[in-house]
Length: 128
Image (cartoon, rainbow, N blue to C red; front, side):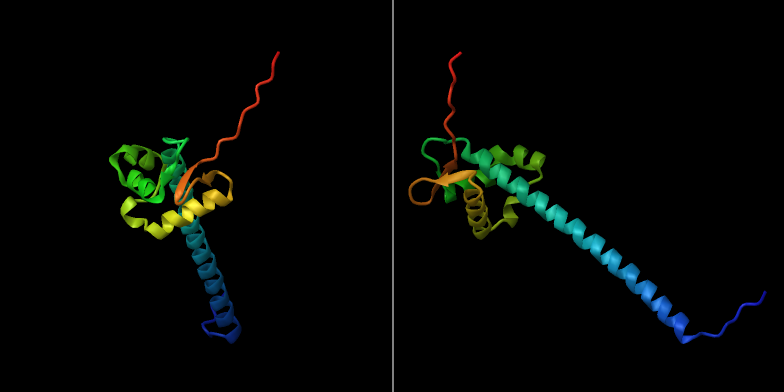
């Protein structure tokens, strides 16, 4: 049995195709990993905002108060446990986007100008 050292075009194209498939698969894995981490972090940010809005169910909080509470040491432990973003990396535009998204998903409601609160549904008590 002898080894043929001649390089053919077919062999070269097959090698390039296999390398391209491997490279594409690797890139796809990396992109999906970072996308998943970003989605988890955004979900944790929204959860933290809802936790903050839980403090004042009657009158709600302004966007600035939500940002201030998010950046405070009071919510630091909750942010870390939930996996939320570093407060220094979130801009006011991100907070506005999160509040709008929560409002569209009917989790919070806007009360007054620039005040938000958790949406509370009335509970009907049935008599026995």
